[in-house]
Image 1 (cartoon, rainbow, N blue to C red):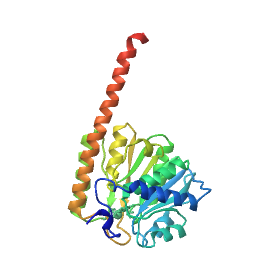
Image 2 (cartoon, rainbow, N blue to C red):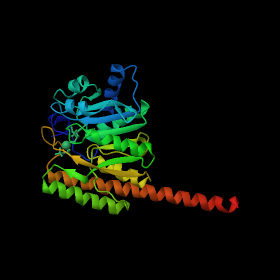
Image 3 (tube, protein in one colour):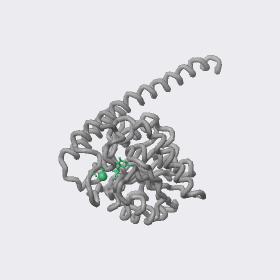
Length: 291
Ligand SMILES: Nc1nc2c(ncn2[C@@H]2O[C@H](COP(=O)(O)OP(=O)(O)OP(=O)(O)O)[C@@H](O)[C@H]2O)c(=O)[nH]1
Ligand SMILES: [Mg+2]
């Protein structure tokens, strides 16, 4: 069965974007611009990519304050081809909503949200999941860190805090991937798949991102290898408010996640080495003349 023929309520799991992704996102952007012709975004945009989260999205949006510390907040939901009322409910709970006509993946939806936020002038972009697992009450502490210029990217860590998930395999996976990414990037990272994040908006434009679905490790590895300062903050990861994970069963999820890490690390390591050689070459070329 081809990707196009897949049932609409199955989320996109391939490791490459679907061929029509640019067309689907372009159409969604045009419709978004028509719906909000005088769009004015606040300095902090909370981006939530949601797929069939009608039962949860309203409660998630209601938890986010209009202002965090003294930074005003906009809510932006990217509905990734949901077949339920996710878009309607997000709109009625105060979010700007951009709706894709077909499910093209969590990564695709987030990148579209980042783009709208950046082009709308956001200073900070936060992400949350649409199922209520991350608590917006953690955002003020993260804003404080970025406002104090102690980091460029703050991430919630369930390992520094707590998880309500009792699945031993999933929790072992979180610990395992944290060790792998820490070793690869020579950083101390305890949670690589957290959906609770706050970053400087420009970071989302400079870190390469191509993954359609398993995007958290791609953004994290890229940010670390490009030299962005990453800070983890303890958080409690809650149970999904309702419904089931859309990311696949544990083993398949883990294997796909591992492939994304390997692919991203090799690409970003090569890019970082190339940038460093170019710098060294430039220093060698200009060095003697500079003295
Ligand atoms: N845009 C988009 N979002 C998705 C897709 N699949 C899942 N999501 C959203 O991404 C967030 C996290 O997905 P989940 O299915 O909860 O995955 P998870 O949190 O890793 O798994 P659980 O811990 O079991 O809930 C939720 O807000 C989902 O609605 C998708 O294909 N596209
Ligand atoms: Mg979830």
